[in-house]
Length: 82
Image (cartoon, rainbow, N blue to C red; front, side, top):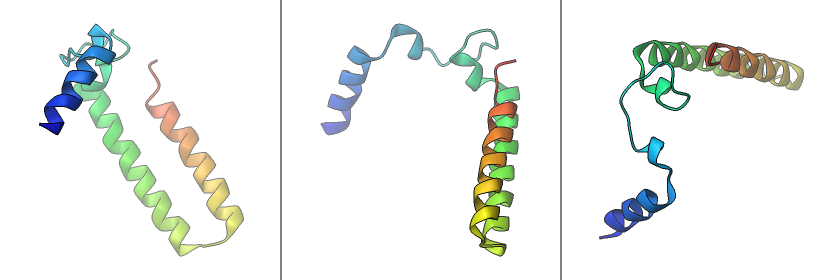
């Protein structure tokens, strides 16, 4: 009962283009369903995993902050639309 109610509200609140999940590399929302985007997302996951392991290995605040900012930059660069 609860899941159906939440799904009903999401159907009312979300725009029409968010209900379509077919991959389209030219659409700003549906591009994340393409195989190329999913491959880049796997790369970002691996980079964050390695970054977190390095943060645990060197627990100095400057290293954690610098590595976190750099990893965020690389993630946004890889997942950018262009």
